[in-house]
Length: 236
Length: 382
Ligand SMILES: Nc1ncnc2c1ncn2[C@@H]1O[C@H](COP(=O)(O)OP(=O)(O)OP(=O)(O)O)[C@@H](O)[C@H]1O
Ligand SMILES: [Mg+2]
Image 1 (tube, each protein chain N blue to C red):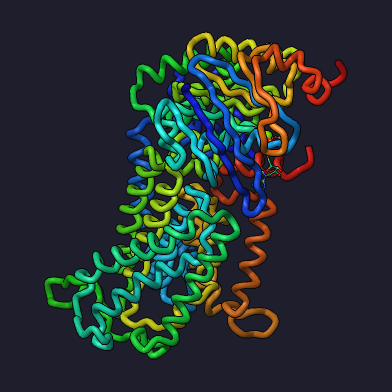
Image 2 (cartoon, chains in turn brown, yellow):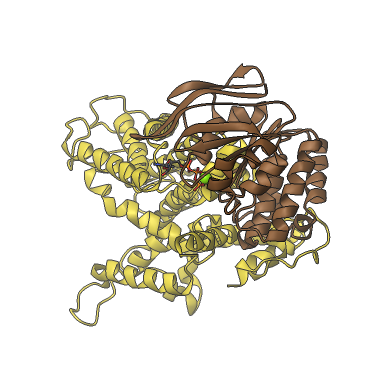
C-alpha cells in the first residue's frame, strides 16, 4: 500500500474531527473520499499532508511511518496536495505559482519537463502564463492548483474538491484530466462533493460521516449502494 | 493604479523576462533600462544622498528642504537610523508578512548592549571601544529575535502582534526599573566611532553630525544590497509564499517556521544595527528613548512608504523622521508655539491622506497590491 491510515484521530482544540479513521490507497489507484459538509474530508487531507498533527493512530506512506514527519518533508517523500479553496498565491504569476509547486526540487531540466506537461494538461494555463494568480477566474485557479500540485512530481496526489465552482462542462474535463494524470502513473486520493463523478471515476471509495468511515467499496459498488444513493447522489 | 495592471496575456515576448519590467510606472521604466543606465542612475542617486548635508546651499529649493529647529545634519542622521529600522521592519512585515508591533525592542537591545559594553556607567566596567561592541550587540539582537520568534512564530496574525507588543513593553519596563540598565539615569560617555583627521581631531565628534550621517548612509547601502539579494533568493521566494498563503506554502514544501525565524532574526539584526548607530552618535541614552510610539511610528512609516517595497520602506522611514524634524522651530498659527507639538496630528492627517489616495503606500509593491485585493475578495460575501 502506498498510503495507510490506521485509527487516525484528530482534534481541533477540544473538537474531535476524526474518530479513528483507517483507510488505504494502493499504488496506481484513484481513491475517492466522499461525505457531507463537515464530515472531516478536508481534515483527513490535512492529516495526510501534515498541516495538522494527529492525536492518535498512524500514517504510513510508501513503507515509512510519517505520522510525526514535518509537512515539508512529506512533500519531498512524494505527497502533494491541491487544497480546498485552491490556495493560489495571488501575487505570483501562473508560472511562478507552478514554480512554487516545484519548490523542493532542484533539477532544472526535469522541472521544465513538468512545466510543459502542466501546460499540455491545461492549455489555458499556458495562455495565462504571466497573469497573476489573484486575477484568474475560479475555474482557472482550480486548474492552476492541480497543475501546481503536479509540479512536485508526487507519488500521491491529494485533491480536495477539484470540481468546486466549475461549470458542468469543465467538471467533466477536470475529471478526465484526473484520470489522465492517474494513467500517467500518479496515485490519486480525491475528495469530492460531486459523488456521482467521483465514484464513477474512482477505483475505490470511502464514505465519511462525522469523522468516521461508514462505508467502503469499489467505485461502482458504492455508486449502486442504496444508502449512498440516498445520501450523496441526490434523487435516484 | 498603474502598477497593478495585469500584463497583457501572450503579447509579451521573451518568456523569462521579469514581470515588473513590463509593468507601467517608474519602476517599470527603470527596469526596462539597460543595466549600465540603471547602474549610473543608482550611482547618481547615491551621490545625491551623500551630498544631502549641503542641501541648504542649493539656491531657492534648499532652504525649503532643510530643517530649522534642529541642525540639518542631525536631522539627516535621525533619518538614517529610522530608515534602517524601516528596512529591517520591512523584512519582517513587508516580506514575510509577520505583524511585529514591538520592533523597537531590537533597536533597544542593540543600543543597550553597546551601552553596557562601552559606557563607564555600566556595571560590566568593560569600557570597550564602540567598534568592538558592534558584533556582540548584533549577535545579541539577532539572538533575541530568535528567542522571541521560536515560541511565537507558531501563532498567527493578531496573536503575534500582541506578543511582540508585549516584548517591547517588557524591554522598556526592564530598562526603566532594572538597576543594571539604569532607568532614566541612563548611560553616558558611550564612545563614538573611531577615526581622526590629520590634525588629530576626531572625525566623529559632537559638533557636526555629518560624518554620522555618511556612516549611516553607507550602512544603509550595505543593508539594501543584502536585503535585495535575500529577497531575490530562495529565501525571498519562501517569504513571499508564506506571506501570500502560509498553508499553501507549507504544502509546497516550504519549511515555514524556519523562514519566519530567519525573517525575525534578520529584522532584529537590522534593528540592532540601528540601535548601535544611535548609541554611537548620541553618547548618552536612557529608558525614555524606547517608547512604544516609536515602534508604531516605524510601522506607520513602512506601511506609508509601501510595505514589501524596499524603496517604499526607505521613503517611509525617512519621512517619519523628517516630518517632525521639519516642523520644529516653525511657529503654529493658533497658539503661537512650535508646530512640532502638532506633529502627531499632522502625521495623522498625512497618513490618512496617503491611505485614501495611495492605499498601497507611496511606492507600492505590485504583489502586495494583488494580495490585498485577494484578501478583500475573501472577506466580501461571494
Ligand atoms: N480549524 C478548525 N477549528 C475548529 N474546527 C474545525 C477546524 N477545521 C475544521 N473544523 C471542524 O472539523 C469538522 C470537519 O471539517 P472538514 O473541513 O474536515 O469537513 P469537510 O468534510 O471537508 O467539509 P466540506 O465538505 O464542507 O469541505 C467540521 O465540523 C469543522 O467545523
Ligand atoms: Mg472540505
